[in-house]
Length: 402
Image 1 (cartoon, helix red, strand yellow):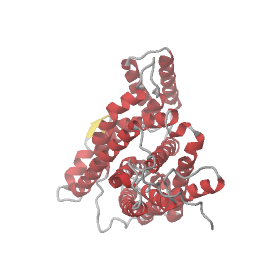
Image 2: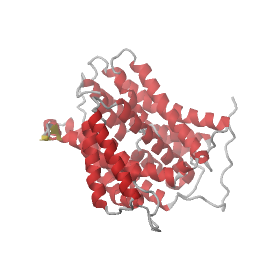
Image 3: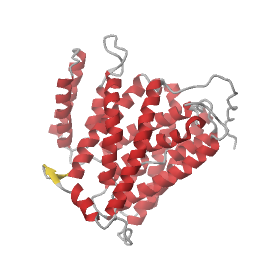
Image 4: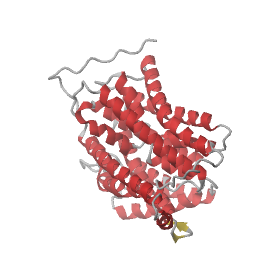
């Protein structure tokens, strides 16, 4: 079967594309945060499986307030900031980034859709009849920090256009994950509080249209939105995404820097260097025992996650991209070959942060949740090794500055 012709190598001395400054800064922060995220996950695993592992569980299950423990407040409270930053990045991409142009965005959007659908389907096939089908959303996610970190390690070998493709794909992937969390992993919806959350959103919109620029009323309304969303049964982190999407991504009153960019500049380092590593520390500490997979359905759940992340992401993203190119709906990023696309699809199988987050929502504390988390850790590790090695080989003869 014929495939689209790979583009010729970039001639020496030809004009070389570079990442926009704001995108390069964003990816640089993600890459540095990815290293800290990995360290936090390793600390959690070692701590939970050490002779003092009991202190790990005692710490994160310490009740803080409202009958909720510390881990719960990290997942439902601190992670709102992470999802707020995600919302800001989605808004930036929609307004001034690659997602504003449907033709340019077509390839990463189609590839991302394939990279969400195929892992979910493979997971359901592997777990059929095991009682673990509720975790189908776990292998759908791509971890921006880890994926960008892997690509950043290769530096100038990777074309800037391919880095932008990965970032855009990951943003679309985040949109899909947010929809999945909001629609499929929210329970016991309370119409009264949903209405209250909607009223807060309307109030924020009216404040924006009235030209109010002070942060005080927006912060107060943001807290109110979080409380209403939390009480409504929709996962509270969705409030962070909504706030991010409501933030203006263009400069106001002639300002060169938009509110979204200013807030991202302040919050993104906190999200990458503090909040996400703390999340990993609180959630990656799975106890590995000889009987870890003895519970009914545990082996299938773990295998389904690994297959979804390693095989599903690669086949889904690369296959959807190939179909898009064949049908004329999309085209390869500049200076990119099909071996590079296959490799970057494998890299996108690193689904750490959001995958762990969905595992917490999909299963109650117990064997199936532990099996899902072990699957995320194992699948992400395999995807990183396979994808990173393949990308290095595919880009070996390329030297395009980032």
